[in-house]
Amino acid sequence: MQALFQLDDDPDSVSTVAEVRSEEESLDERDIEYLKSLISSVSANKNSIDSQIGGFSIDWDVSRLGKVERAILRLAIGEMLYIDDVPTSVAINEAVMLGKRYGADQASKFINGILGKFSREILKESKKSGERKSD
Image (tube, rainbow, N blue to C red):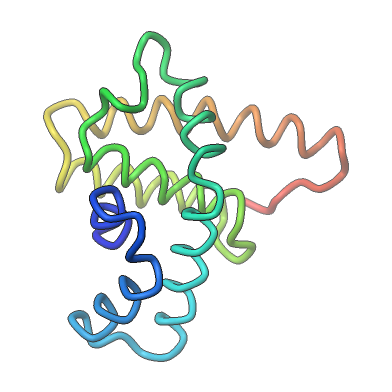
């Protein structure tokens, strides 16, 4: 979440954010690869992810969201769409917990609502195409 938060201010730092975060957090090789994969996926698909967030956050433009909430939503949607070994329910639960810890008042409820709607829509579309992601 911190890496995506940082990228919100400096989108050109994609190549260095994972390295800096991994050094600061003392991550192992597996976690570093996960972080790089997630950052790359979210960065490459940021406009699409933001469009999804905007579509599910009625009357709220993505630019009006707090930076923390925006980073958490991008993280969770990035995991749901692009990281195969993260179950949808885990991505949502972790995002809600991050919202409770770092977000503004009521952020966790907002995040849960957006991600719940998003996951139901994704699962519905995935079932139709036969590509349902595991929970």
